[in-house]
Length: 319
Image (cartoon, rainbow, N blue to C red; front, side):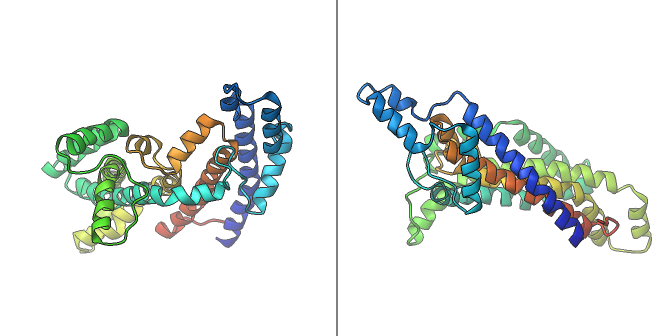
């Protein structure tokens, strides 16, 4: 296992270098000018715009800028934003808590609800619970998150006025009242994303368990006199989780990337909102850093998922 992990890490290094090159090349060649807002302002003389371009390094060829960006990243320096002139890592640190408080919590809720719902639905196939959970799973899986978010805003934010629909990122938790306000403003975006994640995971768990329940090893376990609960948990669920692990592990990096649409709907100042605004402004350092960190997380959790395969199924061996 140790040799396999080392080999995968060594393969991941050139893979990430290629990914970083592609990301930076696409952003550099895209028809987006970070200084377009200055070009539209007649009060800014051309020589001033040229000095700004030179100060940002935009007068250099993009391959040179890519090499400088990569070498600085090896020193844990992710560059400076073109728009805010703040270090990119500081912008990410400011937005990440909001993303984790909404997207991260919603993903945890989705996993904690999706696993038991899918398991019970498979064990009690064609029951009332199975029909209801399957129907709701298809509904929340099919509806786009922006539609669900707008629906909740209209019902619970505008009509009933139970929850605020504009996220207040300046809110600081100092007492019980501020904690309650934080929970109230997070309920709707968490519900939107949590219901979607629950639907996806429940469908996968149900489908996998239905494939394993009729197999011979399950009948053998029951023939040995094991309790039905142990048969389901120790044998059926454990073997059914192998493909689900891939789904869950590869979904964790999306927590960092943020739910772009949902953050836009509820005005959550998270990583997703930062990425969208940076793309529209042509802020190459911010966009390249966020996308590259997302790629690193995808490669990392892909490796973690492969390792978990061996934990769930002892028959899987890595040379």
